[in-house]
Image: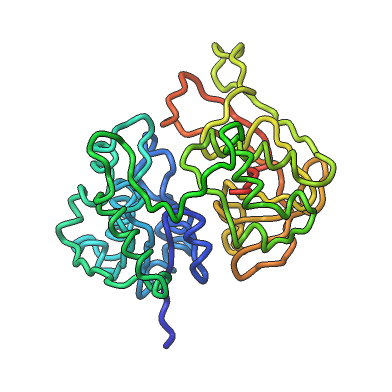
Length: 345
């Protein structure tokens, strides 16, 4: 039909599942650090501005995860580029998402403050037309599980006296013995191929271990890379303090969310996830999953294992990384490291 559609998503993982998808921050140049700027870095006379003007439809999936300031930044951009008198510049914008799922991440804040940071509290929300999807297509063959997900999301399984939910016993795997470490047992149960040496890229794209806390992710990744066959390769970051009065702080102990660790331990064929947008047109975006193939001092040869470029080799360089000011550190530092992290999860 010759229509131009710009599909985006809040998270890199969601964007990777959309044909020609990009993260919303990458596509519309939305600032990551809300404390420094709320304006999208799109020059009026640039090629991206021309593309946005020509677009017939803009899609933003997983909008329930986005900060309302991010969506308001897009709205201001569209007014600036298209029609300043109409909401979103007169463009058709489709937002998708389920507020039963992940809300915006607001560091060290309460659930109420996370809700206040979401799209539903924006001045744009009342002007949006809302449609409700009624059927879980992915779980169509298992309606009982689909109903369980709805009940979980609606808070019907929440215990009043505890911050826990009650789940069906048939989806719980108990440890074989009270003396067994549950982490060791669950990793062995789900990733037996590691110990047998019988695994492929499909092993890491068809199953996963899920945990909500970064500290637990790091523990599991450390356990699994030790079990992983092959010789370990060690990459240490180069950290620089940007504040002259804080040079004595041990930055090697810091690993803010969204940044590579100071000590990166890898092995051939181990799975990693990309933490930055390097080449969005080639789907090298935040959230892209890769398999390490070859190692060099300042480059890593990786294989893409998801999306339209699955199976293609790419080189990942060391780049300069900075934590956002929202981390709350009383200083600024810069880390030069490969923008990847182990991703057995």
